[in-house]
Length: 189
Image (tube, rainbow, N blue to C red; front, side):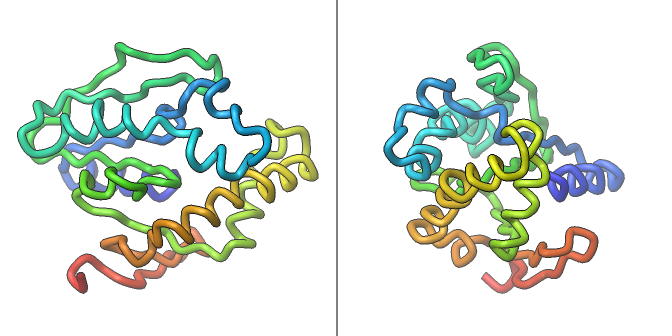
């Protein structure tokens, strides 16, 4: 999210119409997200995000032949309400930056114009997640347990099944957000 916000700010400063959408607005309702209690990693990986709504209500309208009118979110994570009426219009030449953990899954892959993968050491990513979410998940130990069993475990599934770094157009080393390293750019694809 930090890089996405910074990128949008830079694009706007350069006069490019740009907006940032974040995956927190594209979750399924809590009951759907938490239905697989026996396998929390697989449940998070397959059930957390409403990827169909993302495709139908954002990527298709923003793609070739689309009218540019797209949902800004389909779910409120805090209230668990489904959102049906929040939309924006992206005009010609607009750039929409979307940040999401599993954005290269299945049919979504064909709908992106450009994919940037942030390569981060697993332990660094785990520490960032725990630090960010400790308060909301019941403390550092509870957050670490949740990340190990659900969130990072789901990311491991994604890495194994989709090979996102290999498929991305751009790969950025992001162990240190203050010093990102370009590992592969789109011109090398």
